[in-house]
Image (cartoon, rainbow, N blue to C red; front, top):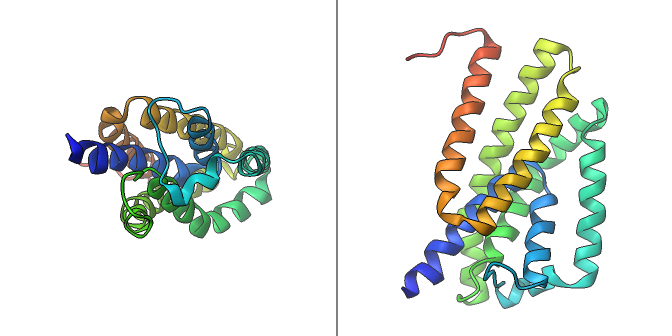
Length: 194
């Protein structure tokens, strides 16, 4: 049972939050900070990441979340956010995932966060980018605000599932990647292989 609490559940929650960070940088971190602050769902943070639940961090994350959600609806700013997100989102994924390994020493928690968070956030950021490129190519960017809204909802729901029902994280992430792949293939005009 110790392995479940020390490694498996933190890894599942971390995967879900990192994937959500791959779509929106700050929303999943804000959700994690609120959950940790109010000690909900049995989520505990590693001591070296306790700053996430502080009042200044909550205020900063709330402000950053509002700005990111709004700016991503503006055609030129969405591309700038995407470029910055290529670096920022994997870093956010590392922070979100590493914070969850509460029973580990800080260095091991940070390493676990890098292993779990960075590639997951990067993969979902890349999938989002490919979908956004396809949207820009097929609609001239007119559908990008709609795709941004879908990203908002998916990021929120993915983070919520990770925090509340971590055992559903793997099937959810697999389904999201499959749908993104199908959309990308359709936008490219190729027929998917059955």
